[in-house]
Length: 419
Image 1 (cartoon, one colour):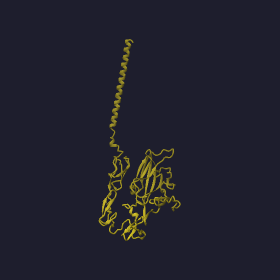
Image 2: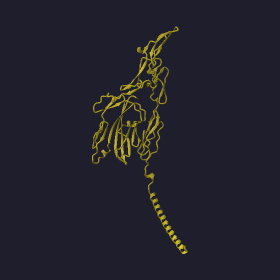
Image 3: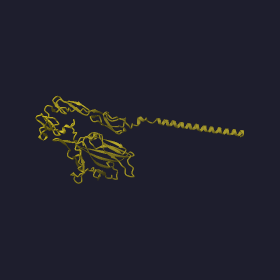
Image 4: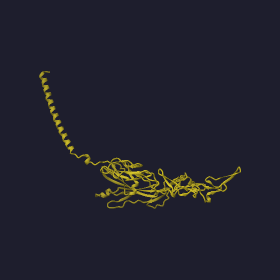
């Protein structure tokens, strides 16, 4: 290539590079200007900790010797506490995560319940604490679980005396010039060698546990001469093992007297005739019975009716039969939602206990088991006979907008027996 052509090419490259340098410098200047403006606007924003309230509360732990129900620490969520047997709760049983990110109430503790607080030992006996139990140390000449018997006058607890039906003459024979006497099974020898008698052994007393419950029989032990048999309360039948009791289902076996229009509900040892009623009509809200245990709200009027829209869409009735002293915590009832085919279901559910007495609220807690299900949990043992009612509420939301509400009325019938 000739020299003047090479020089021309070099000059063109110099011009191109000078143009690129100018455009690059101008781009940097514009970028720096925009960055400075963005920094100025950001500096004018309020601090996050000054304007945005916290949406969670600190984690809570279960008290010593107690349990905690609830694992969500968001604003509006509740956490519940219960104590193990032998302890009672001191402080609030429920704490709410508040808008300011703190929990309502103070920390709860589980305090030991003194078994000797009721002074169960009589006649100068000394009460000795144990683990969930006590024992009476009796003074001289007194005996029994509560030092209630005088030793020198009380007959043996396991023997039946002063009843001819429970006495037998011994069977005696002379062996090597000596007389030997014996008693039939279920009897024991009493008296002197010259004037002995066979008295019945009260098996119900011999095998009775220290705290008063029968080991031989689930319910009641009946002593008979030389033996015993078990009995069950009315409404129960004795099983093949001869000691256990089973509830008789009067509804299934048609042993009830429920009139037409009522429904038989089996309970522990008995039955009930029920006929749940739908909520009364008021304003623009009315209900129709769709089954013996469910009512549905009639469609709301065309005009805007907020009270009708907020009223329960369905009201269902449920009856549960429980034994006395059911071990807790125990899941009693589940409430869930399901969408119709082809229709989108709710994206959020809220469960709560409503319309119940303060006592009922202390017995139960609501807990979400999964995204679509809420559980009613019994947290305190119930001793029958007792009837307790609790209302559960399930509200459906779609995109944070209220859609419908459903109410389940749960009626719990507690038997006086633990089987």
